[in-house]
Image (tube, rainbow, N blue to C red):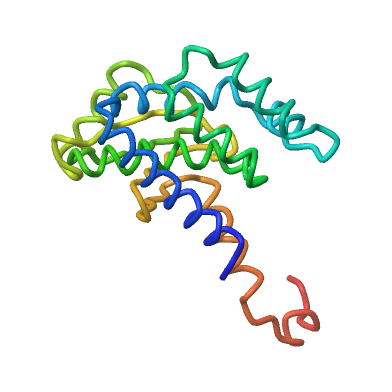
Length: 192
């Protein structure tokens, strides 16, 4: 099993448990809101500091409790558990997976669109309308910018990726050129 598969399954198990507890307690909406907002506060630097071997678990738990007093109890309990199990680094993936699972259960389909440059209002509306036709009325469309695409756009929904980027086109051309057979005759021919 690859590290990515293991991380995905770990996030899935914790996310499912978090949603189950929140559902039993009637706090699902608050927990999901926290899952959407906490990754901003729980940065890689904060996680590395709290998960560092030199930081005692009690200190890490106290720091989390003090910095997140408004977070739902289920979120605070999960973070405490993750500290105990040395899995705090999995928290952002767990939060993202919890939101994904809840949206799927509610019939929503997450669609991420990345463009090389920001789209104007009319272009965004056209892209959104086309994606709503393809993915359905419950599509939750998020548009972002990734300048490394060079041009075009990519659309991702779950395991489906539609890559219409210039970066991909260039990579395909490069692969085709490198795979083209080059014979000795090419180099020995007289140039006009």
